[in-house]
Image (cartoon, rainbow, N blue to C red):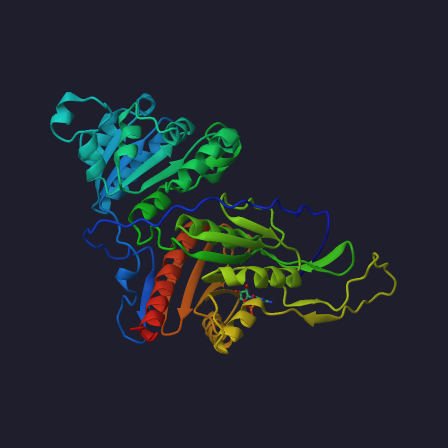
Length: 471
Ligand code: C5P
C-alpha cells in the first residue's frame, strides 16, 4: 500500500458522456484467417484438448479486401508501412489518396507496396470503364482511412461526395474505420468532436487517436495509433464483437481516507483499465467506466462514474450492474480501509502510531457469489497483479471468486504492470488458458477484448443451448 495525501495532483475527473451506439454490422462470408502468432500464444483448452478452443462462428470473420484511404497529414508516411504489413498478411490492399495526401507522398510509393495502381480521381475515364468508384465501394470488405485528417472527418460527417474517397465511403456497405491524426487542439475542437460523434453514431469506427509527442512539437491527444494497432484492427477477429453489449468496468486505484488530508492507496494508474474501456468501446460495446482517482482522460464515448473509495466503487458497481452483460474488474481496489476516518486532521504525537484497518467488500467476489447462488449476473472478468506464484494465485482467484476469466499480470518486472505503458498477461478460464507476451497496454487490451468476446459468446451459446425450448 502507498500512503498518500490530497493535493498531489489526482483531482476529481469530469463525468463522461455516452454517445449513440452504432448498429451491429454483418460481414460478408470470406476466407478464414487463423489467429496471428503475436496475438495470443499458447492457447490451450483442457476440456477438448484442441489448440484453438474458441468458436470461430462466435465473432465475425476478418476482412481480406481493404481499401486504404490516405488523407493529407504528416502521418501519411506511416500509411506506407500499414500497406506493407497488410500485404504481408495477404490482404488485398487498394490505396485511395486524397489530393492533400499526394502533396506529402508520391503515389508511386503506395503503388509499389500494394502492387496496385493508386486511385485518386473521382472521374477517371479508364477506371470508370473497369473498376469505377461504385465497384470499388462494392469490392471493399473494409474501408480503412489512415491517417484521417480533421478535414476528411468533417467532409465525411457532412456527407460530401466531391472526391473519390468521400464518395467511396458514402457508396460502400463495408465497415468504415478511421484512424484520426491531427494537432491536439484540432482534435479537441468542438467542431471535430461533433463530427466524431456524428460519424460514430452512424457506425463509423474510430481507432485512436493516441496521446503523446506530435509532429508539430506539441504533446497531447491526436497522434495516429501505431501501425501495429491499425493492422491488428484490420485483421483480427474483432470488429463489432461486443456490439449490443453493455460492459461495466472498474479501473484505477481507490483511496481510503485516514483523515481529511491523508489516505491509503496503491500504485495503480488506471492505464490498463482505461485501455480495456477503449478497446471494448471500439468493439462496439456501450461502456460504463467506474474509475478511482486517475490522471487519465476517459476515452471519448464511455460513460464515466468517478469514485474515490472502495465503498463508493462498490456502491456504483451495484447501481449499474443490472444493465451490463459483462463486468470487468480492472481496478486495484484497496483490500483494507481505516476502521474510521478522522473528521479533523490527526496531529502527530507519539513516536509510533497504530492504524486500525478493516476489510473492504470484495466487489467482483460478491458478484461471483451471487451468480454461484443462482442469481442472474454478468460474465465476470477479474484481473490479478502478482509478484510471485502467478499461476497458483490466479487459478485460486478464478475459482474462489467464481469468475469466467482471470487475467493475471506479473508486476515484479521493471517496466511492466503498475503505472507503466507495457504489460503482459496470462489468462485463465474454466477449462482453458492462454498467454500474451509483453506489449503496449492498448494493444494488449484490444487482444484481451477479443478473448473476452469469444469466451462471452461461447458461454452465451452454451446457456441458450441449455435453456428448454418453448414450443
Ligand atoms: O483478490 P485480489 O484483489 O487480488 O483480486 C483482484 C480482482 O478482484 C480484480 O479484478 C479486482 O478488481 C477485484 N477486486 C474487487 N474488490 C476488491 C478487491 C479486488 O472487485 N475489494
